[in-house]
Length: 339
Ligand code: PHE
Image 1 (tube, rainbow, N blue to C red):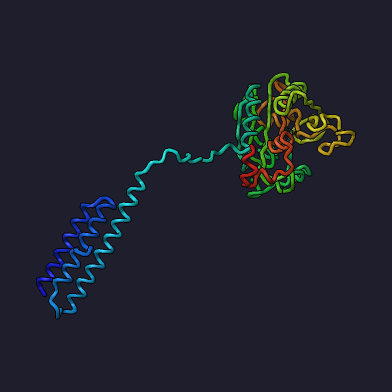
Image 2 (image 1 turned 90 degrees about the horizontal axis):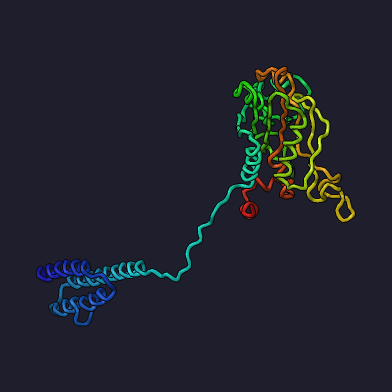
């Protein structure tokens, strides 16, 4: 009995060694016949038992047999998975790694920036959370003035807002440069309480400011024409309409001919659905108010300037004929992938 138990131990030991040495499924097959075959180690052990055998010993040999089976099949799986890894099939098509691209608003910002860089404007970004002075009071909009109601402003505290326009950059630029010439394009985020097909609560504006001795409305017209033709196409035309802003005098609204009807207001003898009149509104502009120049530390006797503030998403929609601005800020990849 004791002799048989040590024999079982020895067999287990031998199995361990054999398994360590085997590396292929053929090796495992050989071990299977060595241990479990008709003339195998386990059968010989069974046959060598005395006729009136000890039931415990029979059980121990059965356990050994199961153990050998388990270990052999585990080894087989191991050798097969190694083999699979070794196969390099060069005919399998490569994996396509999806490539991202810049968001269409970012692309528009870059396009706009590049147009103004060519004219010698310096690109700026000024705070989106701004104090009342830079945002309103310094721009000639006193407290309790009705003009404050024009914009649906988000207030952070009584004295600070999320900027509803980029015009705060005008005073900041004057403070930064201290003396003319000033030629900046400030592109930044703006916020208003509004949501519909053409408005989102967060959008972008680009604010131009040019100050030097002798700057007049014709300079504003020239820059406007240059921008409109570069961004929308050479065939586009612009016009000024009188308007009112507290921080410019005189003030204008700038229009640009509609790309759908080419400024005629008619498509196939029917009124154009996009513009109705042949013109689309680009945004506000004007000659910088003397009070604003003074508030920025400049002397209106020595210099003058023009400013404009237009919407990035607005020009993007006008150029690409987008029906709904909310799509631009949805994360629907099927839409965004087209740009
Ligand atoms: N800040 C004005 C707006 O948001 C636009 C503007 C900018 C008008 C500069 C005149 C001069 O509508």
